[in-house]
Image (cartoon, rainbow, N blue to C red; front, side, top):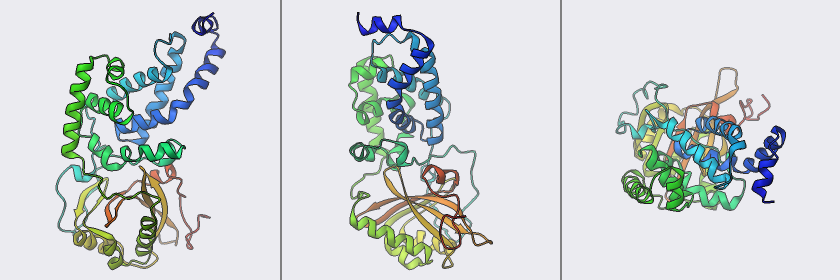
Length: 338
């Protein structure tokens, strides 16, 4: 008796539940990563994967094994992502909406909560295999996820499946119910568009680089000591600073430095706790309130090159702290025992 025949004979709800959970769970992390790349929101990706697994569980009794379970799950996930992207499928960063401000002394502008902003993704939510993390790092960087926002949904899916996950054109065609020629055409258009909007990753250092670790220590110390001159010395000439959901952003070391001088003014007002997101170094930036307790202010995700800090995206979203394993508050000494 074949395994498929045995499976069809044993279709009790308990057996199906146990079998589905055992066989499908190993794919959950990679599906979250796939949906995050598609949607640009870690919250939406996690919610959608829950729905995908519910849909797959409901249909598992009819799964005939004509494709692998992984392929079947990706088919469900792709359809769910494309449906979610209907209407408004773009999640920008402030730098994707307009030019930089050259008046850092002015208020940084109102927040735009109605804009579906790009979100960072904590490394811990994805593969625990260090080799997989290293391999996937370039395709998890914020710059790459932001560039994907410029692609229509189907082109986005084709590019991720082909260039990131390494699927064959015929496999992708079968997955999205089209022809191999259509997949190759969509991939060509997606690559061309991506080359127009994606900044190069030349000079980006790896998180384990000793020079980067030392630079990050100096960066945190400069923030905590309100040392603007030291901060500026760590920035590249063309450094960028942006703060979703505030649409205003700044470009150039001098402009960014003048902006930071209006926000980082007193020694001890800030505490910086190291984290990682999107395969990049990050900090949970805490600010001291009137009770002396440090509260979450922004999750800063840094792009570091051999020349220094090239970009900081400071996400003004306290909900991201828990996702990155950061404490909800720090006491006056900087400890987490609040």
